Image (cartoon, rainbow, N blue to C red):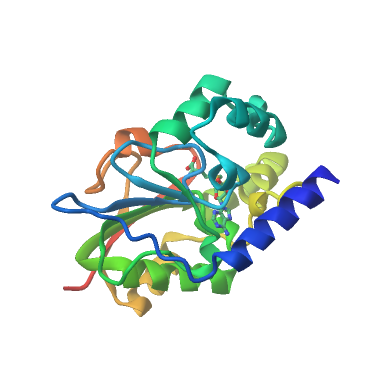
Length: 232
Ligand SMILES: C[S@@+](CC[C@H](N)C(=O)[O-])C[C@H]1O[C@@H](n2cnc3c(N)ncnc32)[C@H](O)[C@@H]1O
């Protein structure tokens, strides 16, 4: 019942906000965007996620306490961390299946970690096209996803359950949690190049041109990290 209500609420918000654009006043500052950020947010970034927390989080600690319980976040974070992310980081809500709510050529950096695999093959392609649209010419995208090649290695080593959980995760909960498509460097590179990205490069954990990756990069054991640039 609770799950159905949450899904309904998120669907409704998606319909109501379909054509939203965040008019971020950037001045001389660079616009650096973390898409599908979850609670892994940093100050100075525009952090966007489709979770209940990003939809209903407020500056009011009492309401955030209720949300903390409703969203079941106590399994993962202390209330202090939860509240701090909502109150002090620029955390915004959007269903990224509907596009990226930013102007053309507005972002310097798009970072997205362990989000792309939550989209279907075609939604994922559209998300990459959207990333291209919102980036400034020469702008950088950094993508982290579970690496399908590592999944195959693990599977061949007999780590069947771990492979299922890490790479082919399905969920009884909110639809957002399930994995819908996986990538190798080759398949991701092909898609990025088809869209018009150049300099598509496989990167190591916490290595590359993207700012703050010492904090933002997670899951070194099973991730593929890729950077590319929008052609000038
Ligand atoms: C595995 S978490 C990754 C969080 C964080 N980026 C990290 O690396 O730890 C996936 C995130 O994608 C978000 N997500 C999934 N589908 C989404 C959608 N259609 N629109 C926006 N966010 C979505 C979920 O809410 C969740 O926070």
